[in-house]
Length: 571
Image 1 (cartoon, rainbow, N blue to C red):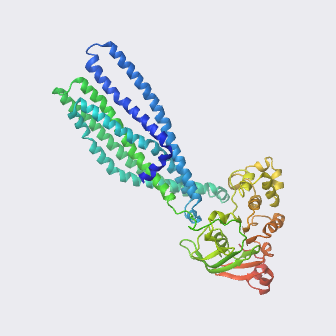
Image 2 (cartoon, one colour):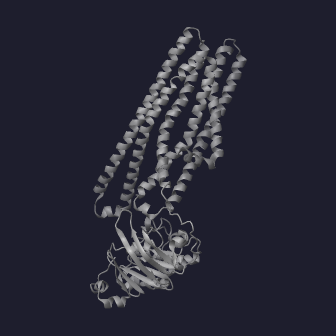
Image 3 (cartoon, helix red, strand yellow):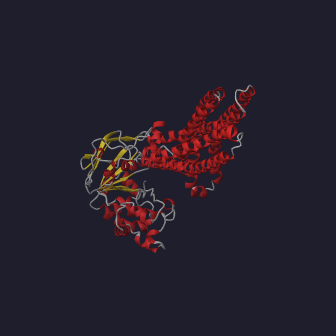
């Protein structure tokens, strides 16, 4: 774990070592003062050497000026190192999150992920800055103080340093307890963040059902668990800090008693004892730094451990022999496919279907039959239990995931728009597309005229998840995005479900034009939208109940015909 953490310092090693060098100079400045004071008391004051007193005063002024400069450097650039390491970790974590399978996000709350990405990494940043610096300075000052104090009087030095093992023993004893306490508090703050994210995202539902009291009570339960966990962490911190403070105070008593006895029996003189009094302050400074470091280490490393848990989750790796798919033609086949979600029952068991290049396959049937799941398997959002899916007679696992997905355009019922402009949301289909192509895509989706009617046109901000737009407007922007991508395979999962009848008719011709010559899979809510499909599958939780063209299924007078007869729409 330490080695893995230390690897993040490598890109910033020049600034890190400069920070350590400044810290050494800072420590030397602190070590110099007691030695100069001893010389003044031993030699220059008794000899009434005013010239040397002035020289020493000038030297001390210079030392303090250097100390000020080093303090500035350590405080500023030390934190810069920490924040850069934090930024690197956040970049790596977000990059890894982008490559994780959808199954990870199915079982992890957004707020919890955000807590790991923001809160935990903030603690790591503090550790990255203060940790190595505090340990390095503390050890340097402890060794330096020992050498200088031993030169004055070794027996008294040994008496003082004999207290160190007790401090180390106490710190180690409390370390594991602090680790558990900090881990628990981080878990609970993640749950609190998830609860807040959930409540804010669903604020409109909460208001509509006048359930603000219920939301507050639900949040308060998590909030109380966090307070309890954090209080436990503070309790351990209080035990640790108060115990270390007691040992430090005992050290002072030992120093005064032992030093007083040595002074009484003429083993040391008053200037030497005065120097010891000053050195004891220097001795306690690194001790306090180490005390703070232990707390910071536990807080930061529990955060780093949670960071590593995300980073160690297996990403969507391509098969070893996977190659670029290039531009596919779009002939799709499911061959004896079986699939089940983690811990769930089988959604498909031995499913075999095929869609010829340029043809349209429609999926209808009740909720829970697996229509959307079938669509999600084609771009490899989930892995099969058995069987295989082919495009152009090649197993989709033989393609790299990126190249496979570049050939597939998806418009789903749950439209997601980014919190940016209309232009950027459409251009997401092809970030390198020209402005002319973006506008043309909007025209094909019948959204261009509406966009032009807005004061800011294509630069209009859509708000979080497109909240400033109607459902139909969001859907048409999503359709424009796919028009811009222009893929050979289309998946329209309830693509017109949010549109009113008039708007649906406006874009249906555009959708028909988009589907022309492309392999299309349509999940239908409105049966009128699938009437012209080359083949229609009626999907139930028992599998494929019926298949055929609209006319053939109507003639069969089965489930499909019943749906039409009842004018029942399925999802």
